[in-house]
Image: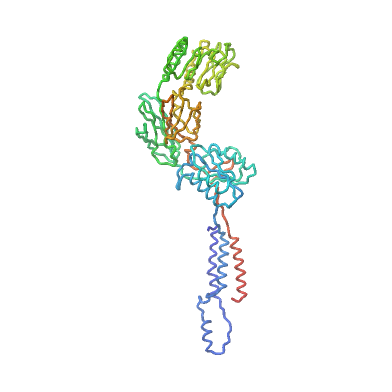
Length: 606
């Protein structure tokens, strides 16, 4: 029990005053006795001027003291704090983003949030309806207008994921639920580190229950590598999200064995950098922060350096020195050349086939780069047309990055027929000059013109364009293929001869990726760690490491948000789900009943 007006307790001083009045009150009466001998007994009682004897068995005094105590209690405005009582309905929003994994006194933030929500649910009476929604990138409705037992069961099964929270999307869903006539109080259990709506929202009864208090956190913001003069060098960026400078000890492991330890001082809100030379043939690296902070998931990162395995390329041409030289510029390509007449005698398999004015009777299993395809290929029209209109590259196409077409001219070209899932990269009017897509399950880039019918080989755009296309056609030569970021779709391209592709997480549980092809893996359900990619071709298995990492500045910033803005509405600090119950009216009513009792006792002569 607490008091809203505790200063009113000063009225307790009236209690001794009431007692004093009873002590000072002289209660004398005339009494006639038949003998002076009887006077001795009467005198014994009347002489009792001893003050305390007047208080013996004085019912009126005790009633008046109790009455005074009740009145004093009423003016102090006593109250109890209790959970909100049953309403028509509750919509409970629980943040399931990564920052809810942060450790606090008493458990993780998710555990604390579930405990708060459970406390509220159990305080409601039977018949109260609950809607439970997980707040992630997209809202997940776990319970819709369910009862206590159903919502408690689903609540206990909630877990934070490797994802960012988006309150904007969730409130759009909540607004839609409320528009259907549902009257509900909306309570959001979170540390506030979510994407907020920029404009007004249609949720009036919104309460923010802030979870957590810690703000100390360090994170590995980047882990990459490059070739240096003395060999490969790894780069680690350490981000400090704490309010104070930190001296951070970082361990580097190569293939699971300690390689080096470094210490770096990182100022608050700023990054620190570490550089690590490592052996050239290292298959994977792991960086670990040794400091204990609020969030563990961003303290470890993995890196799989790109192995310079050469990809075999077969160039089929009558003679094209431009094409041959530009392919040899890439040190990761092993280029072989053959004339069209000798193609059928080729027995080896190649990763990339470059056809210049040629198309085989049976398409090969490797990726394709085709120039001036014949009509029999089905990749272009039969006739060449003069190019008179301006070249129009597709805007914002990554394969055309740093490729300038301003000074490139094409005299004649066939119209490229877009392959399955194809996209035009270069057009002139309605005619397609360059396109990409898939031919018989393999990637293909198709030029509709002969390089000798253009000045493209004479421009700086040519080697850049071929480099971009070969990187797309042969992603195995691209080091980013070995790095996967959780939350980003992963389009995995494997060797064309592969029949089966599997992925093994750190726990060894098999994840089947293919068939079917192509492989587009959703990474939202993955956990950070070092995975193993298995490619099976005619019974032979090829294993390679894949680094799966999670990084998010939004989630690594674990400091709870005090001012949560919903449009222009500042929720400031958390809104408690508890209410104050003042019971002084009941005390006053009891005092009135006691006053009536005192009056009756007085009339009865007590």
